[in-house]
Structures are given as structure tokens and as C-alpha cells.
Image (cartoon, rainbow, N blue to C red; front, top):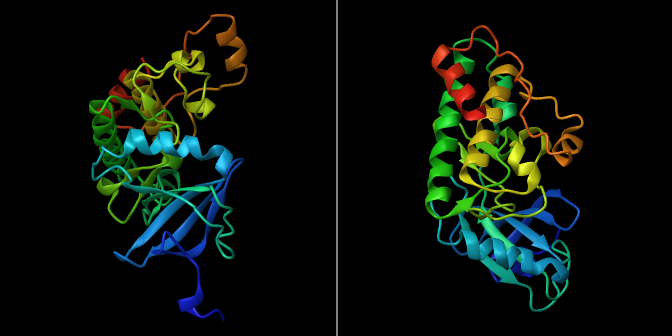
Length: 254
């Protein structure tokens, strides 16, 4: 076993624990913070994608809320780090709060009975609303609200909105990003506004209550390309859905 004293530390303080996941351009690592204690989730990308993390850090550094995963710092690797990090010089690492919990869709699966499922959906929805309010007040849009990006610890009201990699200034126009099943019609055209986040929240609440997304997105991109952006009628919610929650979801999807 390697001597802990000889284990390389990122930025002299972060000790590699394990890899949490990887995507097309980078990885997410779990690390121990040897300076302050606690665990951190660290997004790492090679040098050619470092600007993306600099952009994310610049947007999110000033936003803090109990229902948002906190962003701590951006580290640029000056000298290559060997195993277990395996980072080349110039790689960038965005250090974020590690939320110990499960995704909202996993958490709701353990709450099949009513009214527990509806109560959970409301509590998670309120947590998400608080997080979005903080982002929107800072002039930012999340861009990828969905159950998988809501991490729920033991208490549903303490759920945190994570994965802010698609966050952009309000009104930003770009190619459609995010998860197709949760995109508002105007988001297919590249618009990013608080309203598109709230629409995605409505689809998220629908999914938590019903176990499926509200809309069939087959052919959505082709539909939008033709300029036919009328949203389809959502699938029926379970009969047990409380009327106030049913109305809220309907308003968010309107």
C-alpha cells in the first residue's frame, strides 16, 4: 500500500479517493480536503477544455445558497500529477462541494406510497425553487434542471441542485443544450431564461410524481426546426396527486 505521505495531492491539499464518473471531455473525482476536512467533488478536464471550467467558476463563484452545491476554487495543474490523479500539466480542476446523498429519482423510488411520494415531491420542489431563485437573482440560468441533478441527503428539504456546467447568464442564446426530455420549447431554439428553468422544474416534479417524463420528445428537434413549438399535452398525473401540486405542475408547464 502506498505511503499516505507520498500520495500526490492536488493543489497541496486534495487527496484522491475515487473516480465518481467521466464524460466526453473530463472526469469527476471524489477527494478528501486535507486542509479543511470534508470531501470534495472535483471536475477535471485537460488543458484544451480548461477555459470551460474558468467560465463556470467566474459565473458561480459569487452565488451561495444552502440548496446549491458550493463551488470552492479552480486549480490549474502546473506540473503533471501521476497516479491516482493522472493529470497532465495545464489540466484544470474545479473543486466543488460533495453532496452525500442520492438523486431525486432514486430517492423517490423508495417512496411509492401516498401521501409520502407527494410530500417528498413538494419538499424537493421547494428546495429546487430556492436554489433557482438564488441563481436567477444573480442573473444566471441553470440550464439542466432534472431529477438526476437534484441530490437528496437524509432530509428532502435539504436537497441540493448540482451540475452547474450548463449555467449561463440570463438571456444567453446558444445551441440547444441540456436534457431533451426536460427542455422547454424555446430552449430547443437556444434560449436560456428563468422561465426555461421553471419549465424544466415542472417536468421534474411530474417525473417524480408519475415515474415518467411529461412529454414524448420523439421528433422534438425536427418539430422545432419547422417552427412548430407548441408543447405537447402532458401525460396524466397519478389520480392520487394532490390538486395544489397538480395545478402547480400545470402552471409550470404552461
